Amino acid sequence: MAEESITIYKLIILYILSRVDTPLPLGIISDYIIDHGYTNYFNVQNAFGELLEAELIRENTTYHLAYYELSRTGRETLNLFGHQLSYEIQQEINEYLKAHQYEILEETSLISDYRMTPDGSYLATCTLREKNQTAFSLSLAVSSEEDAIKICNNWREASEELYRDTIKRLLQ
Image (cartoon, rainbow, N blue to C red; front, side, top):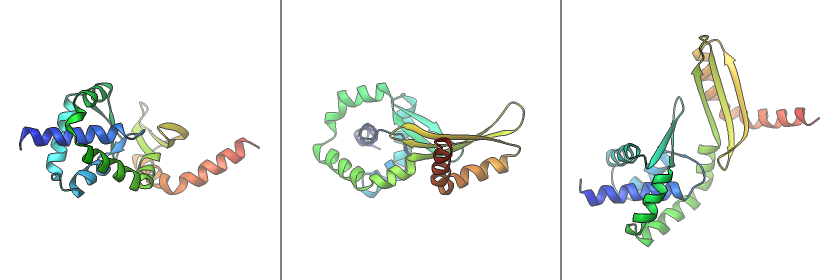
């Protein structure tokens, strides 16, 4: 792969992450790059790996999904080298993000994860975020990993009702 090509892929990733105010999963970014014919999935993975290694982006991983955000160094790098990304590509990215804003919001507003605690139980944490701010968070200790996974998997469907009921109950 030509060095110039990988540089463009990396700049696209940095630019996308600079245009949103929340970490994004790989799928949203790679869908744009692949669907617009820039490269294939393996080259996108390679670009992500190099950006992570250079600490230009950060990865936050849940039990089933990784989210990426721009680091301070990544923002500085984009400011220095972003001019190599054509105006047309920048506009195309902006249009893509606008067209997919609801999908992005859905993908990034509900986060669930679990971990094993020192006593051997599991702590499932479910979070509702709005613009990278936590609006609601729920942590539940359960005895098995299976239960923790069930809680994380059911969070997407139950979150709205749980949030509404909790607010209603606490504000009475």
